[in-house]
Image 1 (tube, rainbow, N blue to C red):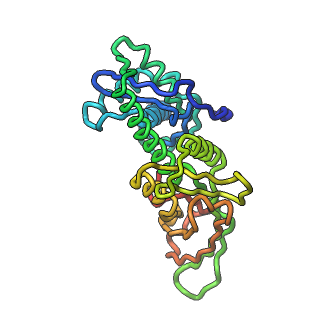
Image 2 (image 1 turned 90 degrees about the vertical axis):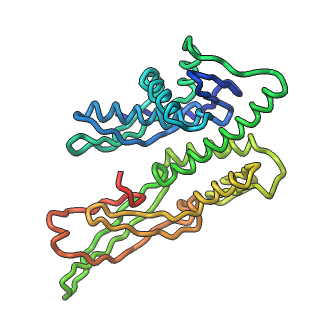
Image 3 (image 1 turned 60 degrees about the vertical axis):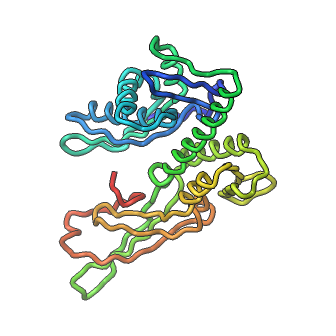
Length: 308
């Protein structure tokens, strides 16, 4: 069902700001032509659940364009727009899993925020708010920085939702006289290859857009052995809150779960961008009650302890 991933391309416009029913939407050079979103939808049937998941994906992607303060009114406007314009905004999608009654589906979609802006621009109710005076230029510069923050927050927050995979390498039962069963589980955490390509392209673009000699607000990210300019970026955030946000997502813990046993484990790491470089392979021993293993033929693991 999934199509091949198209090349990463940024929108042809440097900046556009639109107002629809009092809500401001802005797209700057920080917004890529396509972003990847993983969401869940629920419905009475599988097609309805998938459709709801895709609408949620578009709503989440459109969120990076929304610079107005969040409110019930703004949320309602966005939901209505998503229902009108979701067709043609999703470039491709893959259904990861569907189960349960009612049906719950997890979908990974590739959404184009720029296509949404172009559709919105053609609506008769939309007002274009760009200007050329100094005040307008100030607002443009400020909004560009705000959107740069929102885009960076989006990608960094997605690392532990869509960016990492955990692979079970082996499971063995250790002989024991104890009443509980001892399991030895070996697993490995790695980056999702497609997401890693996407976030690195974004960070490289962010580095080019933030060239400034400001070590106080700079974030250095390296994901492999580096030559002159390879496998690393230096991002100037212009703001300490921006810098601290990036550092938070780089160094926060990685948790893995074993679905069948409802077990969660904290995986220690240098920082999340070094996971593939240094390797994160762990072996853990688990003691479980025998009845919990009844009808369990294999163990499946995932990132985070909140099961999707």
